[in-house]
Image (cartoon, rainbow, N blue to C red; front, side):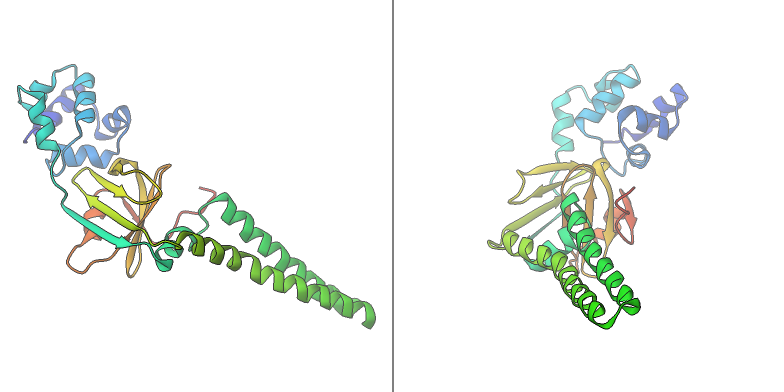
Length: 244
């Protein structure tokens, strides 16, 4: 449906920028740009929001008398889909390669605290008498071993639990949204506006949604998912720091 020009004209009549319209609708500025150039189609909910914002009707907005026709045209088949099994590599890359949760941070900094204590014990032993220094070195050695074990052991146990039964993951990519179907969640429809950013690695992509699941997407030779996603959401080299 070629209603991008109509959306553009109505926006200009109101004297609004793409960013202002995006803020009013709760979507990204890039989405407005894609809709106006007919590179993507807004959802039915977004069309309704557009109609209310511009004080017009949906049939006038899209030039269609029957709203059911809009639904039929928007509910298109997926552009491409991916299915894979959740193994140890997937779980580690998705959940534990970066600090993603409060539990991860607690265990990481607990390990770090033991390692720092071990270092201080080793340094303090330099200025102690031999017998006391030996005790300090033993304490430092034990603390060092605990610090080296805690976080890796935490990751190892959690990965074993999650991969006890390998589950199938199914992902469908559509023009305006993706569908994520896995064991942990009921089938989720995620608009690209709700994706914060994604990370591109050698053999996979890692998608970070806003207050939603992290999504692991394996790289497939004949499907250029990276180029497709880069037109819709931000691509980063690494995860955002946890304090941002």
